Length: 166
Image (cartoon, rainbow, N blue to C red):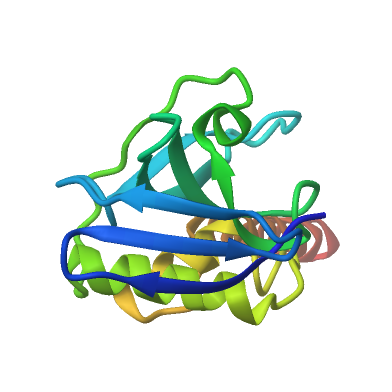
């Protein structure tokens, strides 16, 4: 696996990304850098979203890059070419409201990638990475939704059992 180990921002709108394999990418920041993107997560029955952060465009190859947390690709947050992030799925802008501006979102996301906190489906997934960068909150909408559904199911089962027993 290749990890982001460092980044340097320049005043001319360029961002240099340094990776663990010695590769350096020079990225042109765009008006969309720091915006949230999303696609449907593959191989799930629960209609889960897989958000990421748009980084920018490689000045040499014109390839777009996305920062996201993925359990298979990195096992942590990392930076991928757009094609790898999309995995053949339709990608669209996620218009959530962020308390941090786009540059802060991008910086917080890059810092998370450098820290390489291990992926965990409950406490450090793709939604946690994006929400932390966007709104300073380590939350996952879909984990919260599923925990709520499970709790409702347990409550309903207990209520039915209590009703039948009486």
